[in-house]
Amino acid sequence: MSLAIAARHSARSAVLLPLPRAKTCEACPGRDDVCATVRSNDLGRLAAMRAPQTVAAGTTFVDEGEPALHVFTVTDGVVKLFKLLADGRRQIVGFLVAGDVFGFAAGDKYTVSAEAVSPVTLCRFPRRQLERVFVEFPGVERQLLDAVTRELAAAQDQMVLLGRKTAHERLASFLLSLLRRQDNPDGSVDLPMTRTDIADYLGLTMETVSRVFTVLKGSGCITCAGAGKVCIVDVDALAELADGAARDDA
Image 1 (cartoon, rainbow, N blue to C red):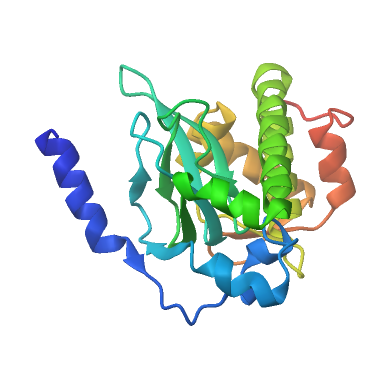
Image 2: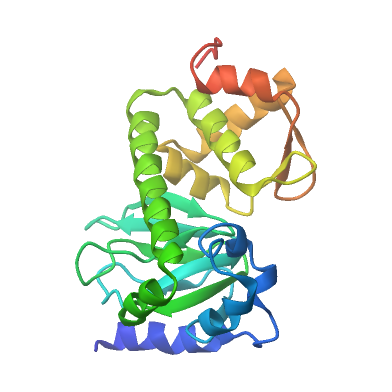
């Protein structure tokens, strides 16, 4: 192991902390998604297979190319998935929120890196134990297949977004996606990621992202709702813009 990799793993050990078992599966966002088919009286057995942990904001806890030994479920916070090009440029390929699953790989190595955007809690399952989980809880296998299918659909949507949409359409699509996935009762969207993160995900410059945010606020589609949060005021108008039905002056 190189000194750089050893140092990174050492740093992780200081911020990748176990959660107390008292944090039960019953209150986990995954209870309504991946673990929805598991009966309440069976949750204890499923919990015994997991390793609940916290990750400090700004920590890369999965490296592209490392052995894919675990599958993760995000239970709180936001994670960004990214790839690095040979020249150091970065492409963010996705943001994960509570209830999302990642870590599946076609081969034996992770195909993307993962970093905690905000403080994150997650459940880590060893891949070698997944077969036992599938045998004991067959519904979990179906739910995970659904999660992988949704991930594929999201990747296809991202191809359309990067290839065909304008800057205004891209940001509108991004905000609507987070609105659906976060499902905040007040209609707000949490944005703990930086403008640079959003730009890297949408294939734009940071200046363009900031300018489009200003345009959307000026049009009345969104308002600021505090640090790292926006409120979607006119969902229909934002949806029309995302679909290319509205003029965006890009």
